[in-house]
Length: 197
Length: 197
DNA sequence: TTCAATATATTAATATTGTTAATTATTTAG
DNA sequence: CTAAATAATTAACAATATTAATATATTGAA
Image (tube, rainbow over all chains, first blue to last red; front, side, top):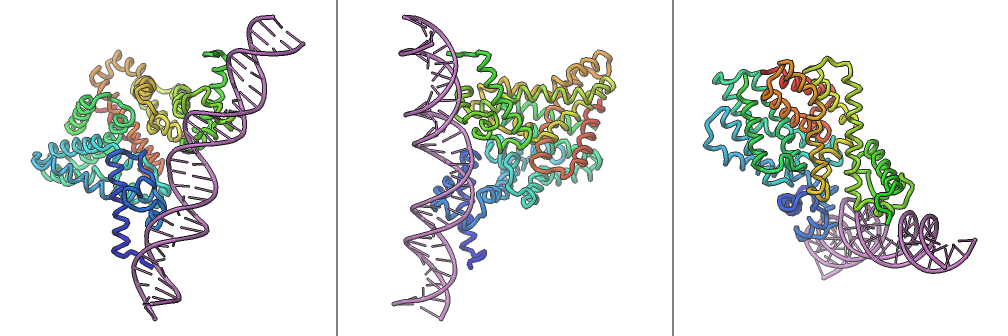
């Protein structure tokens, strides 16, 4: 048996890479076993030597995309003033990442795993993602008495639901219809959430 | 040509009825042309004499389901105290409707129409649904000086995004994991949105 | 009423999907 | 260098949506 050899990991990587390219470019509906395999340079059946099914492969992309998203956000919030400002910028950058990559939004929030229980750790990662991204700044806010602990928790919750809600309606339902409107609405929602006390 | 005869509408109704049954029961992934046609008592190809494709048929169910949802909510808010209380009860009933019918949630928020522009009126209906359901009470609140107009608008916006956000995470990502937690979280979110001034 | 014209429904066929089985090619051990 | 193990490919299957070809009703006029 080969079992977790470097070659196996390399092969998996080829398929994951191919899947990621399709997701980033054409989106979830274009992802297919034959499509992935062709892009990876292998036969479609070969894929099944490395993944139990196509759904497992698709979900393996989530980790990579989270890193990518994190880098995207970091690059856009490096110069942000610490505290609430940085939190706001992070949330906006987060939304913009998915607006630019709707296929990745589909993967994160819409696609259902075949076996939801086996994928729960991944689903946890998604759920806690925005919390993780803003955690440092929340700690900063509390330490500097900008917000109290329970206020911060409240706000984190609101943001946790606001983001997927707005993105779902905008990306999947064209509501609001223009990016400009979406952006304005998001801005106003965040300001409101963060500034009330 | 038959063009919009009563018979044509009746035939359409059979297929819509069948689709609705499947959506309500097994959910979107079980909906298929052959499945629908069998339940309607016709051949699968017959369906194409009445709908351009299966996606159009699926979207035709939305109107019916909105009525159904409305009745569901009315039955559960009839005795609610007017004003903010009734708004809160409406929002909770709205969420519960979709928790009980996750297939209808998929249809309303997740399924993408083939031609999004042709279906925009339907998407508008979905987007404005919760606003429509609560409109009367908001008017009441403003008239009785319980809330100011701009406050009310703000709150409507928040609810408009909160609901799909929470439902998406709960129904599609099992977050939070239990209905009890979901319910508690929703309650707390609504209280917070409605009571701050 | 009967026969053509029309309208409607059905079966057959096509092109995709995911997945598994059977087969071929390649690598590895002795 | 051959035999065994491993890996990759082609073939095949079942299910999907949709279209084309065919069969069956229905209708309107003689």
